[in-house]
Image 1: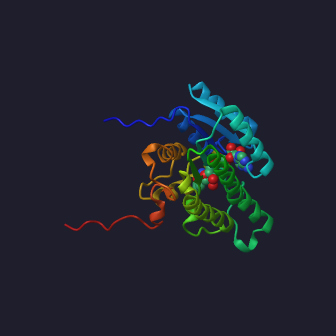
Image 2: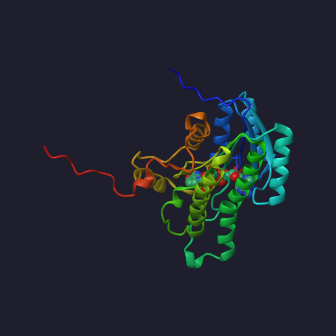
Image 3: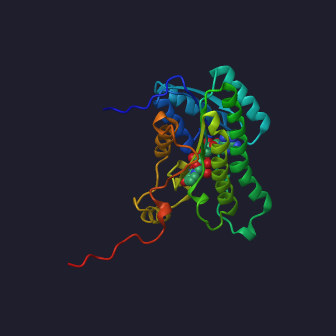
Length: 267
Ligand SMILES: NC(=O)c1ccc[n+]([C@@H]2O[C@H](COP(=O)([O-])OP(=O)(O)OC[C@H]3O[C@@H](n4cnc5c(N)ncnc54)[C@H](O)[C@@H]3O)[C@@H](O)[C@H]2O)c1
């Protein structure tokens, strides 16, 4: 038996798809034959991802918008529905620490903390609301995947606002799964562990990279395309009874950052 995931004609929105994990998620949906709406705040990045997908024989259209803005979101969803006709799947991927490094709670200016919460929780909340509204109107169910983080599940020093926002995204995911389930809308979250995007590569040195890799059971960090594969499976019919779940894609990092070496075996 061969199992193949294809979703021809399905329209999939990926936010923040101009780089990193979002770009790979968009690429993998296109490989599954979906029509991809590529969002990014940076129009050049959005256009670049869409062009790469089209050059590979896929179908993608760029929709530049800042997902933190209600007006920009209203305009983007109107354009998606006009240009692509419908929406079936959404991956709310925009997040991250807005370029900020880990900083002690007491040293973090409130404006910085609010910006992180705006970029992660508020943007995801807004997107979920707009997407659920479209799905409810279409009356044919739908799939929402929110991108959280391993930091949603455990404290991380210097990342109070980021961890709190990601944990809230997980809670939002479960609440929406319950509220929207009767409409046939599935809502799940994925939590990447350290994922080797261009930005991450630029920030962590070799020493830190090796230390993070050694601390996971799989002895490595994740690659951005691994999140793409996961989102396609989660959106597909193979996962049709899965909702309200958080799936950690982190090479096992959630199992503990302890020395994972067993004592030498005695004969
Ligand atoms: N990379 C990691 O190690 C890692 C680990 C855990 C979780 N995550 C999560 O994965 C998601 C993607 O992270 P990444 O590392 O690929 O990010 P990235 O910074 O590499 O790419 C993010 C993209 O989103 C765009 N963007 C930023 N703000 C936007 C806005 N307001 N509206 C629309 N687009 C916007 C950027 O222009 C960029 O192209 C984030 O939610 C992040 O928190 C990443």
